[in-house]
Length: 334
Image 1 (cartoon, rainbow, N blue to C red):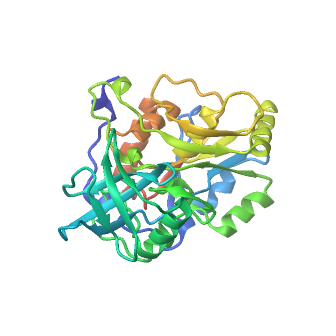
Image 2: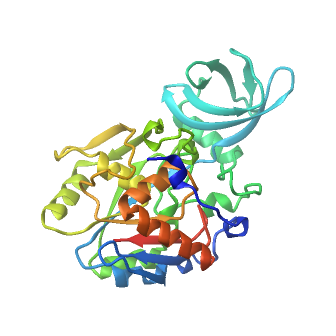
């Protein structure tokens, strides 16, 4: 499949730079894969498109303020973006500015790290993971996606986060869940929609465009996931009874499609790459936002919704001036 087939032209004014005031008032495009029907709605009405017994699976990963500035011994400012701890005291990072191997970075407040250039750039520190997260929570800023052309504010620490986020570890938000409020979740539970949670820590690779000419040649990013045994048992039991499994977000979908058939808890790294031609094993529905051109996320949505139907939906969304990307509107595909 040519990567160029995942391209489209988006007017820059349709990129949402800030969230809408009430999360569940975002617009929602509802796409039925069987009938090919596309309906316009809002997220607060999502319950009318779900059925009792549907299983709605959210990603409970929590974004940490991963971006921070430090200084080299020569007092040069460098921007550091913490991605993930690859082993105790060793963090994969992105860094803005030139640094040398074994160079020390001082972040202030008695927190230092040393650069080690390996396959990826590593920052070595004597701080525990908990201490690093605590430090960044105090002094770091939210790593907003590159298409949001403004500085992150204190408010983004709340806005760029799901209300049910619990497991700290994402450098980017699983944004499809950001449309849900406490009241909306409570109403779904009252209508007998089953709510489940998994964890997948989102890395910045999620924003990386596909640079290969063919989609199949793209090297997909790796991300850590967890699902406990009881949650997995409930999801597989519901599937065996013919109930719909609906993933809220591409991250939740990647977890579900990474599972094997057993009932044990699972955790580890997934590098599952889903693009047109993939045969879905577990997921029957998807809640998702509008994604960037030539991205692995768009390839996943093309695979799930059908290439032609999704192209039609994106053209319609642009025509009707939907808000795009992380802080934008979204869709329900069933």
